[in-house]
Image 1 (tube, rainbow, N blue to C red):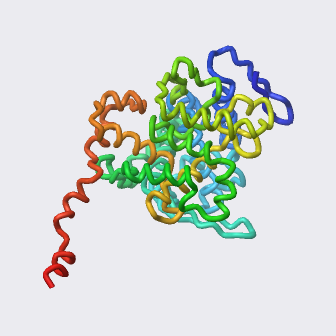
Image 2 (spheres, rainbow, N blue to C red; image 1 turned 90 degrees about the vertical axis):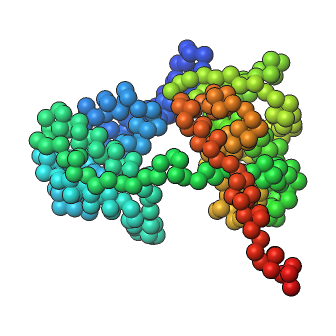
Length: 381
């Protein structure tokens, strides 16, 4: 039974399912955050809240609610479209007076804006993909307001389009097989790390290696790996369970490499870290403070080791999602069926996997390998 604090009270999660407590708790955390944000927003959005709750994934619901709160604060702080001082006080009449042009100005504002907290000024810049999601959040809200008779017109037809690259137009970023080996060599030997990084590497190298190997072997999503428990694994049967999006449960086979790196980590490094509380006792990957490692910490270590493989700055390193792409391209490059790879990676549409099949890692390199103009020139001299 998991326990957390809620409004200064202990909130107990009575889990009767076969899913681990940490998975149930994470879902509850997202749910409670959504409920908290909804209380900050106008009550006439109830229908919209109900739609989000029943039709989109929890993390998408949370992202949409963040977008709507941001939009409401924009109305208050950057326009004269409302007299409210907090989002909840914005009236339906004020929403009815908003024009499509006002939404287009909001989207343009979101491209780049500054936030001054009194001590520092932070510049925020959004990509077209982020802008498209904000536009979608607001569009769905206005459609619900119109459907419910709260506003007189559906203004969404007047929203300016946002150009977002189609999946096939984007160049897939993934490590090549030789770069994977450089990355794993770096985490094994410490090659390429700074003196400061080496001091931490001595204590976490087996954990970090196990994380990297699992990413490039299974193409796990960041949340799937971060939520793994010791009890997720049945080493005698050579398998482990992960919990996917939409509550799906999946059993994955263990290969020898993964079993080896996990055994090295669990029997040595992990045994030297004392879990901070009962909630962390079953967590597979622990921080040095005895807590379940955070998604942020995993992102940072992945960027660190991939930057060494790519011979670039730490900022230029890859995200965990690009290690998911690495697993996909490597598996397909070894001749595996895209349908089998789609099943392993939990792609809902095989067309997603086909993008990796179309991506030939070395095609550009092969094309230019016979076009060494300068080398040929110097050889002729």
